[in-house]
Length: 519
Image (tube, rainbow, N blue to C red; front, side):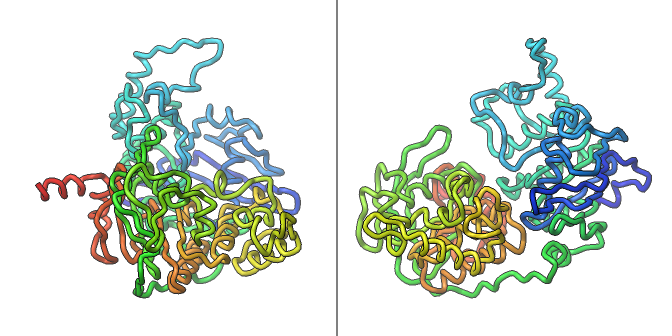
């Protein structure tokens, strides 16, 4: 069913934002933005990082108060700055990063926060019946009594949607909903959304994956520098036109030429690491990172990627097996030794582990090198050189900010990532650990990050690209491995596997077939 087929011309408007303006000091985040959403419609909200999408959604939910303008839901104006009013009006949101308690059941997670403090009791039978009916109606199969910590990522996504529907949401905002799903799970999600839309649910879909926008949405709305610059029916657009409208000019992905790999700069042989809570450790992993080669690691979140990244960064030690840098074994490996050995990392979470929010750009730019020349001599900091280095990163990597003294928490995600990228690449590392390097970035920033990683590869660096985005893995990687439950697949050269075939390995079935074939 296409968007045009399912959307009726006389469908009533369920959400209207009228001339929303919001400023933060001299920055105008939203500039007189107006949009509408009809019953049974999916609109895609697109824009570069920092374009104003998040601010607009925060105003809708009452987390921010607009300087001017109004929000109407089902014809009634919402009071500003009141999150409960939006929820009570039937607006729900599924965030990119799940907000679930692993030690609680599905039923407990779904009903959490739905009871008044004056009526603390829960009719569990009625709650279970409502969850099961919603699951049946919207094809969200899940066991209400299952512990969330034991669910797959796709099942957790269903629980998040059930949470919104349980609260009688009639408008659903989805923020990067496929970021951690396999291709098969994404297909299942889209089937579920189609069922929900056919029943009258209205959806705002936020994504940087333009092929998904083309597949699921009826209309696209594009923000640039806080202004709504384009609105069109999806069937009248294509991915290239959408990308150009987002950044204001034509966008070209970097050309990926064949690599000429050299010697292994790092080798893992039969490495085992302990499990960490529900997250599996590595299970006899053997891997070689070669000079002049990008090695892609595909997999669903929580299948051992964190253990591998922590091992390479020196945060954990192998319980068995060996880690070697060139031909030298390193039985005891520390973060300091990793940095001094020419290993640089783009961390998975730029907010928690990549930067310090209340440090300025200069302090963040030298986080991993502040004790070394030219920034430090005999314990004394040379802040002049540190600031000059940061200005160079800002200019070279197009970090859009007021200056080196800006608190990094004030930057958009894309500009924060560019600073981290500059910090990493200006050190001319031998090995680059790029963990989710473009997660949540717009198409322009994605192309920029990819071009710099390719440049580092061509200059002889070994790059380990860890990503849950198969498009990124298949586009950029010279060779691909899949990780599932801590197990590493064989090496697949570029172009030898389809997304569906990699998805089979990501779900763990390829490993089972390999064992069966070997026996």
